[in-house]
Length: 334
Image (cartoon, rainbow, N blue to C red; front, side, top):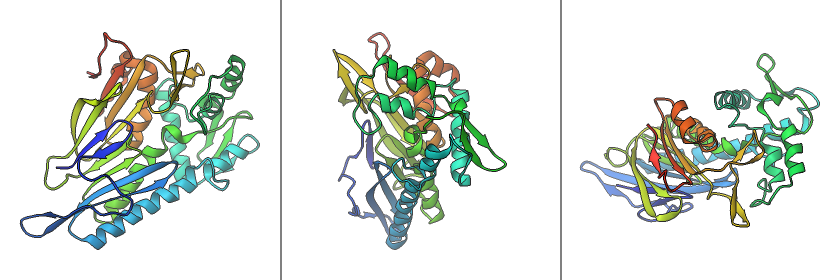
């Protein structure tokens, strides 16, 4: 049974995922069961797909269609493409309403729902804060208090004004900037899974950078895809073993992107209400039916902490949280 490890990256226990290198075939009782694996870069990360099936040509076509879909989404959500919906909104929404595609508008509606439900801990308008802390294109830097205060004035999901009738987006003030870093991978993984289903694939594991994955069906007649969550302080240690089937797992941790000043760690997970990196939690993993949800909710659980997460966790979610305190070990929330 294939084994994958989730921390900063997803690793197969056999041969690593290779760009364009199919895996070995597995024999079944009646015909040859194939396993194929490929990866491709898009949206600033690596997307990997592992498939099981019997028709090699169908599997290759489905895989290419999934990668083509994530490349298409890169043109929708990219900060670096002038023609993307995201770039057009960031450039012009403070001046006038910007008409966007139904797909992008629906995503923004979901983002505002996450913001309201998380009491502002999730916020796609965190762009100005990510810039002053040096996480927009770099590995981070210590921000000056005045710069944080100025960025906070133009941060906040209430600055995003949606007109459902005209499908337009407008900002309440100049300087507001959307950053899809907290949700883009989950959105892309879900879309890739839908494309695989449309192409007849029943068993697949789709990964975005190893931190957001979806397990479709089961591999080689097993109960599900085996996943390990590793200790954020020691990658050699396994903290939890999971078997996933038709569900997602996303992880956010302070180890993903951070810098240190005078022995203090400043991570890229920003509390948009204070303007400063969140503290007190090392990592959060969320198991949910959809990758969009699991990725989005890792941030509020990380920022708001164990007690809040336990009180606001939907029944369909499983949450594994590691606090940065010796007396509170990593554990599943009740």
